[in-house]
Image 1 (cartoon, rainbow, N blue to C red):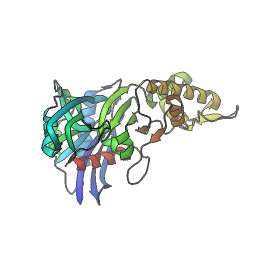
Image 2 (spheres, rainbow, N blue to C red):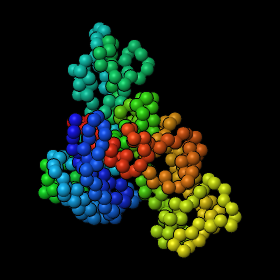
Image 3 (cartoon, rainbow, N blue to C red):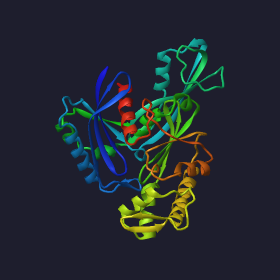
Image 4 (cartoon, rainbow, N blue to C red):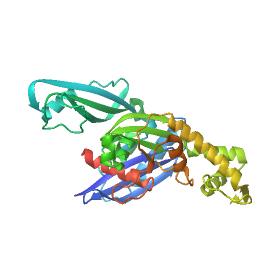
Length: 358
């Protein structure tokens, strides 16, 4: 198998376009990658919608240059804060013991009635099934004999106006025939081991200015929420509190060890500015505890997986989150390489997800 896939990913600060080849199952080989900064997302909104659209157009135009072949469809990963999740339950009751077949499963789907008022469904997934004879939740009931089956499913939706952010003319001028939306959360959940997902897990994505909390069952999302807090806000507070510029704040944060004791005389130095390490560490630790407390207000599974990478540069941040939330915090890894690298892992997950849908 040798397939080319084109994906577009955006987070709170960057737009990234990639054309990749997938071979030998799930091995992803990047062919072309284009990354550009833009004015960003803050408080759940684009700071400058026109700037975002122009940046997308520039990325799309550049990513096709030098490509021997342009895939027909550009798949656009929608950031979690712009997605909503609906769940539905549908049921079939039989006159006698009956083996569940594909027609029965389709009938269960036909019975779902998701609300599509002003929204567009970009993904649907059966979360689990219940049989009349068992209390256990089942991931698959095809071929199972029962007198009744219930399906609990979910749909991921986006607002229809989201289309206005993307210029179909510019996308088609680049050589794509069309574009389709996919959910970043629906892609990234497959970095969690299947057995863990089947038992229920939580995927927390830490972007620069926002954090999303996705509760997962099997191959789908049951709940998706977010709050406007991330490492970008911490950088901004460092700028204000210590009266330093943005670049200096980022360099200081990268040096901090908030969970590690330092000598009284030790200092962090960036761009000629020195800050007492103990004072800086205490400041960062207090902010990490505030973040974890916000996270702990959300309903989560017994195991939490982290993605997004925006707190990775802070020594001990994951341990702080785990202690406050009383949950193990596990960094998502690429399913083949085992690496913890972002945005590479997200881009690979998007490419693999697209192939699963084809």
